[in-house]
Image 1 (tube, rainbow, N blue to C red):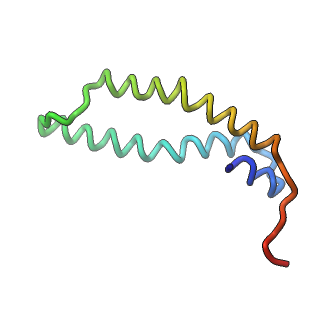
Image 2 (cartoon, rainbow, N blue to C red; image 1 turned 60 degrees about the horizontal axis):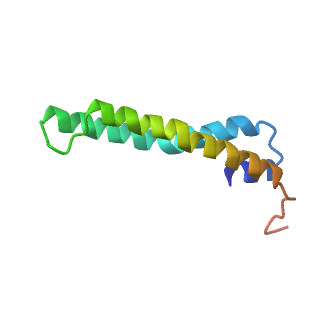
Length: 88
């Protein structure tokens, strides 16, 4: 959606837009998760995930989510339609 809207507004650097959308959406969520997990490890909580599990989560994001993000961005770029403003 972000790439399609960006191309509708005659943006030229759609690849940068695509990468920023993917990173700025998932990045803060992952950083918050890592911070909370570090606090849980510091307090020896049983809810803390081990480092290996966090690596698996990052690997899944890299191998599944990122290619799907790129494919969706390419589909959004190719489905570019003329921008129709809701007002004059």
